[in-house]
Length: 363
Image 1 (tube, rainbow, N blue to C red):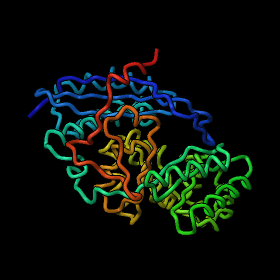
Image 2 (cartoon, one colour):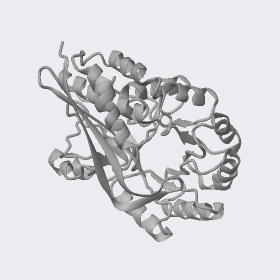
Image 3 (tube, rainbow, N blue to C red):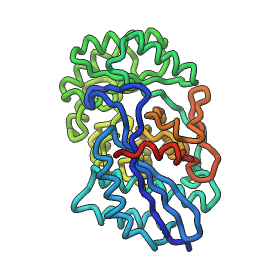
Image 4 (cartoon, rainbow, N blue to C red):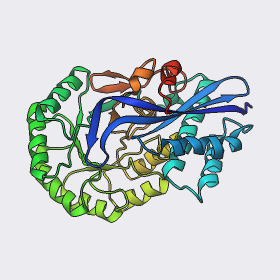
């Protein structure tokens, strides 16, 4: 069996094509990308990554370099569950979330990519295989776009092949959100899948009020209506708001998902493979959701996540937004008539432009 021979970890600042805004993070001009390249004793390589919206990437990078790498060198590369447990318990006392979960996620993704490449199969089939054509939506980060700009962005996404759209809400006045959502609904038509994302803007009571005000717009879901820590508040929003709820991109452990799902606080569990603990945990969350008869969706890292949802019979929608990363990937995600296509290349199929990224190292 092959052993892990080398791990290279790098940090890059990826400039965004336009300044992005939401109700919580403010203006975002760049994202931090942390990459991991794991080589085994026979020269095969697996690639993983995680990202932040502009802060704490150095912590994840240094966690991989100083805390995770020394314990992985020389270990069997194919025993991913064992390695995940070792990483988790190594970081448990000082971590249990945050940068530790981001770091573990990036390494775990690289290990799965390496394993799929060693088997010569695409990741989605290694994970079980269900359907390589995954329903997909365009996730806009557009809270402060003018209405004209919002509709122009939507028109552009329709031309790219998207058949579902998400927009931001969470403006200071709820009436502004209602007006913008109604305009989008009129533009898209009654039955077109439309989601909104509040980025944790509201209290539970405010979220219930907003959900009731938006009921007439026939939303597929409201995403992240309140902070992820308020499990009972989420349950109230689901029960009293009258609109399905998607959340989970800020949950960093399997147990957090279990508590939220068991409490009835989510309709569409939404793990992010780059911060929940990697592919190992994402798939456990998907199976947990399936056991509760819930559809699973996703956040971020669409190039990887398309493989994961392609292995899930209970998948809902894949979120697609490149965060400027598509410029540094050889073959970006393909969208055809509203579905993202999981590639048939071995592994997850992402090939970074390493030379192009070189100039983006922070100084």
